[in-house]
Length: 195
Image (cartoon, rainbow, N blue to C red; front, side, top):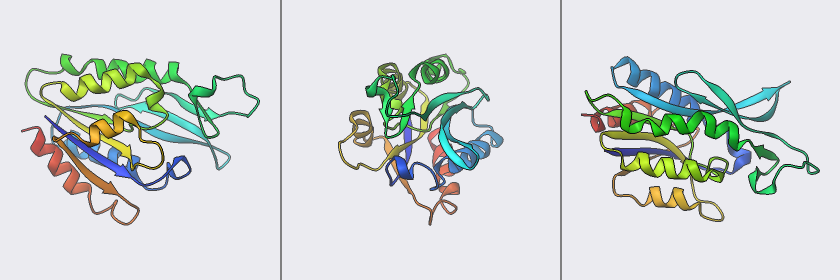
């Protein structure tokens, strides 16, 4: 098993623009075309009238649901599910993501499988079930994870630090400057983990 994590610098204000999701999508397509079994999800920003209004989670099978949307300060949403100006929709997130992660051990018997987890960040970590499912995925035999985590800034995120300290984790620092040059390194490393 191997865990490959791309990490990026930034807070929620810098959540987009680095190119991590585009890089995940390109790596996913390259792995699929080379015959590597792959499943998982990525996070995508949602815009309306040129303005970011939130984030969706999209499974590799094409299912889409809400991760978060802009909320007002007078919103009745529970404060613990808020990151900055965004309110996290845990029900929608868990409905899409948990079945994908819980199917890790039900994968094909013919070889190893890659799971994309974009991302393991503040919004996603409100879900205790997600944390548990990620931990189970990390211990799954024959599983390689291609995921994204933030660079530590402020209060450490428990699961992120737990993953970062694992001996079987290989990390790639994604920046605007290197995002176009590291795709092949990531794809080759994932392919080597699945052999």
